[in-house]
Amino acid sequence: MYRHVLKPLFDFLLAASALILLSPVFLIVTILLTFSNKGSAFFLQRRPGRNGEIFYIIKFKTMNDKKNANGILLPDYQRMTLLGKIVRKTSLDEIPQLINVLKGEMSLIGPRPLLPEYLELYTPKQQRRHCVKPGITGLAQVNGRNAISWEEKFKYDIEYVDNISPLLDAKIIFSTIDKVLRRKNVNADNEMTMKEFKGDAT
Image (cartoon, rainbow, N blue to C red; front, side):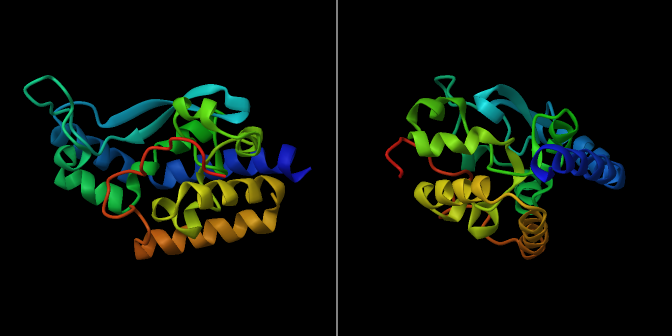
């Protein structure tokens, strides 16, 4: 009942309410990033959702598109703007994903959607993270986010899939708010993003 009916309903109502409340912030960040990036304020990327179905995740764009002399994008840390660092550090870059929730592509709580290239690298057990919609935040995020290993991340993802409940979702939401306010575990070893998954994490 909760997993298939109440959770999707809560997702829609809470995402709609959050977008309305955060609309002034959404507008201001959009304008500032447009100027800072000298281009789009939004970052769209293909990600696998429930059952591996591909959708486009929407985030605020925190890095510009500067390239080297060979036309190759510079490393993340060289493309991250000052405003982008602030947006990333405060987790404001996640706000546009509320639109993905309203579209039914994501949930507020669930395993984070990773790259499509990883689909062929998962073990059968790890594939189970796609039995539910991906989330803006999840059990792995409140237990270390990018500061934990892939093995630990997948362990938490499967634990969530096996134990979805209103109480667990409530705990994750409150823990997420606490960690965002305290700005904990945003990056691993000062990297801009989680290191590439190459398989073999059990």
